Structure formats: C-alpha cells, structure tokens
Image (cartoon, rainbow, N blue to C red; front, side, top):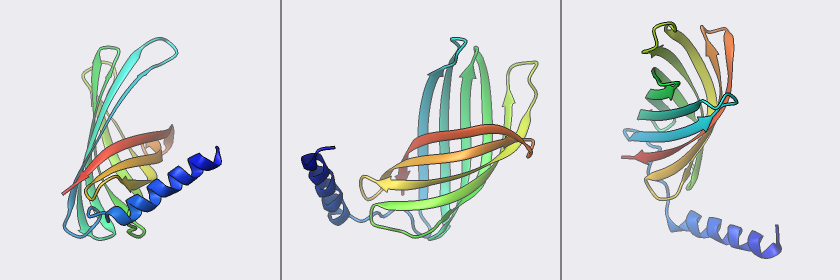
Length: 162
C-alpha cells in the first residue's frame, strides 16, 4: 500500500474518532442487526440466508440477544431460533469488541430432515459508522447436538442501536 493511501486511511480514522462517539453499547439500549447472504455451492444449488438479531443491553457490558435466521436451500425453507448473550470488553469511541454464545433450534419444512439443536460461540465487534449505526463482523464456530462440529462461519451484519 502506498504512503498516500496509508495517510488517507489514518486521516479518516482520526476524523471519525473525533467526529462522533458511539451511543449504542450502553445500559438500557436495544439493537437490531440484519444480514443477507446468497451463495452457490459446488453442486450449483443456490442458498439464500436472512439473519436478524434483537438485543437488549442489561448492563454496559452484558447484552441478551434473540436471533432469527431464515434459509432457502433446494426450494425448502429452514428456520433457526437462537437466544443467547454477548459480553463486551470495553467501549471505545468507534469500535467495541465482544464475545458471545447462543443456543439454537433449527427446523425445516422439508419432510425428511428433522429438527436440530446446538450452540455457537463467536467473537466480533461493532465498528461504528455513526452514533447509532455499526458494521458488525463476527467469526464463530457452530456445534449440532452440542458435540458434532458443523463448522466455522464469518458474517457481517448491519446494526442499528436505539
């Protein structure tokens, strides 16, 4: 990366840091996060995922959350319900890291696949682009039936705090 690009990026970070302070992660606030993912696997099957999450900040560093995920795969609809919590390390003006965990229940309209239960653990952070709006990258691991590893994931959500 050229010197000029580094200077421009540093300038944007400094201006954003002093231009506003995040007003999202604090006691009593709520949040709504959404993500939309479309992908095609090796067998040319299209998948569309819509993930939403509602959160309530019990304290400045503890958030209770409830997630809903809808997935369309091979013309079947899957849904996932997932209550959980996030723990925030500290609040900074534009970035707030966290770790969390969720229990999930997954079911489908497809007659041969039954319900699945499990949990997921993750880490992420809110990168605030204004006082109440953040981009939220999240990386985690998912387990089915609490022991069978499903895999890892990376997701970026758009989050609104109120």
